[in-house]
Image 1 (cartoon, rainbow, N blue to C red):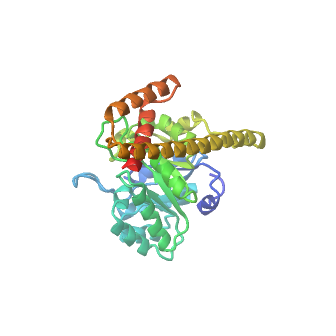
Image 2: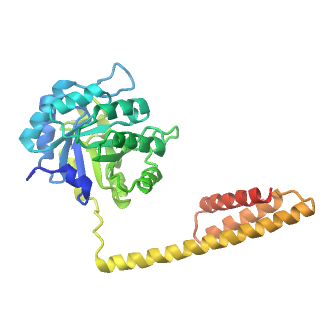
Image 3: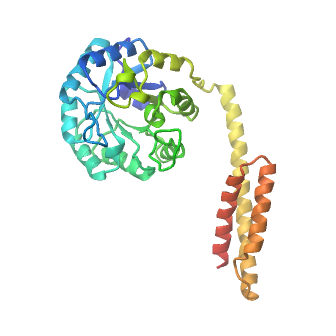
Length: 352
């Protein structure tokens, strides 16, 4: 593992890809140490994760090994040089985790949905400098995610990161939790100072999709991964289908394409392309504003001649024309439809 990794430095300047790995649940001393030994051979893994308390849907399911697991995590830390990380859901979890020198905490998706629970954790963490990651809530609500981060900041915490782990959906998809990439992108827009990593295990729910989703996350600029590993995944007590062995993790990394950092010449090309987009965007806004001015004139004409504002026949005709024209230009027909429906609604509102 080399020298001890300082995750606080990563928060200040997250240039290196942060990789957090370990079992979904700490099940036994032997299981944890065997997994940690395998992970110690992968240089990219800096943080050993392990679930000590498991929020399960059904009460008869395995709900975690409890405090003794923290002792085993501490032993793995001393033996292999990892930082250790676990999930906390109530103040008692925080107190016990810190008692056993846990280096990093995360707040899970089921806890983030409850602002009261997050506030209790924030109060408990006052005065601590332990880094805390906040998973997105189960529901696709960026404000709820942002609110949890703000509650921790209100308690004085400064080393706060976010974990994108996907969102529950009533629709059948190939994912356990739909990634809905637009939501972490929106969080990044709102809070570019909060580093976001991706929990690919919980997005996928199965081993087969891990590499594909990890590459997608890399392409979108994720700053790290949380990936669940187990020395014997098929016999894991929780989430067996989504865990992989440390050897499989090492192979997965070898197949990922890490985008190179931009050098000066490339940066100039990129900046020129971005400038072209900015100019086109400005031109589009000017044209939309011009269109709305004409819509208002049409509205005045309709009022003077006692015509209805909404003329459905013409609207259907021009929408169909725009969609066909867009598709012929290589655009997505559904996107064209959504854009012009928004423009049309604004036009109607101005004419009323």
